[in-house]
Length: 483
Figure 1: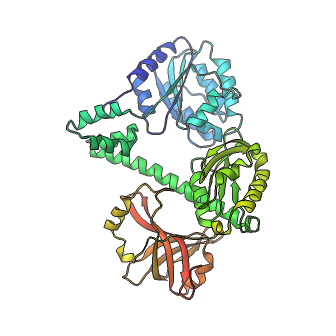
Figure 2 (figure 1 turned 135 degrees about the vertical axis):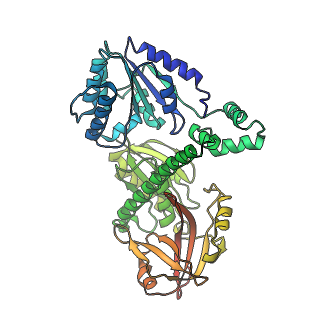
Figure 3 (figure 1 turned 90 degrees about the horizontal axis):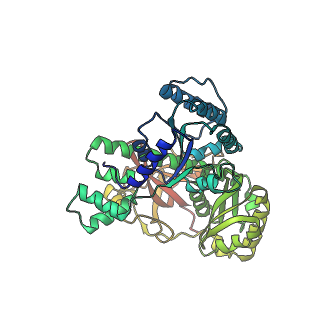
């Protein structure tokens, strides 16, 4: 695809490249993933040697080994073995005392996963080596809040070090119109609206829609699918870990108390999803917390129907660093040492204000269906109702007379979930499902007793295979009634 709408940035970056021949430059570029940062950088810096390094969430020793190998390959410089990233950066800046080149550190914020002092040590290396150094250092990041904290917070060591800043935004409507004119001169207003709704102006998604190269389109699609599958796996992993914590603290949760779980290693981008899952599974207001690069506990909360979680969390505001949101969901941050008191105070508030019916499981069923009705056409119709959310709840179905196909099993660290393989008597079709926290039914299900299920339907993609999974919300054995 032709390169659009970045001319001003390219001119400014090329000027920075020229300046780096005389003075060390530290340019910070932020923008969401797939917005086109890497393409912009590669097209802008073409006059001097170019070193690109993606900072993965790996150990510091492994990052050093990978960057050293790239330096050896591009600059023909053998720096030896390092296990300290700032020291390696110092050695690279030593090369720049007599050679002008560009070094790109992409997803720079990921260095926060190595150790607490990493940015302070990088600041010291930069300050000690920038004089008489001819490096064009370009630092990129897709998580704006973290990058802003690293470079804009006066209490952070790298504050004031950047010599230039760029924030790359999605394509404007005017640019999308230009792209449409180039690729479909007879486009309609509806075409433009569809382009904007599907892509949000994100360069990689726009490229996927307009490319005429089927191999390129397939490669872009695979990369997006891989990223989405990684996110789903993180979601499943953190939900499982949170479920184990809850299973070990059932007495503390009680009949009305909220769920407050914390783990410093959880991925910040997933915790909102996990909070939603926990609130849905356990019918409790749920708060999920992790630790950010500053050592602050940061998290997300979700509520149950009719309970104002914003007011509940606001009652603990003296313990919080920040908070904001609405009746059903709140984002918050607090010092790690305040978590126990926050949990106690939130539990106290919830005990006093939540109503019994608000923590009593209740599910609105949209339709009773047979497994034979879940066809490709059925799934296409389901997708027409996307996106689902608080104001557009995913349809809930009931199927009666289900029986085990003989391969259902318990899963999870404590074997508290059931992975179901079941039929419903309407045909030979075996459906897969997952029933979180419903292990009490397994003995009777595996014995062949019939049962009814309430569920939502999810479509999972793995590599090139698409499968349907039932997310079980309730199970009723044949001799029981729904509560």
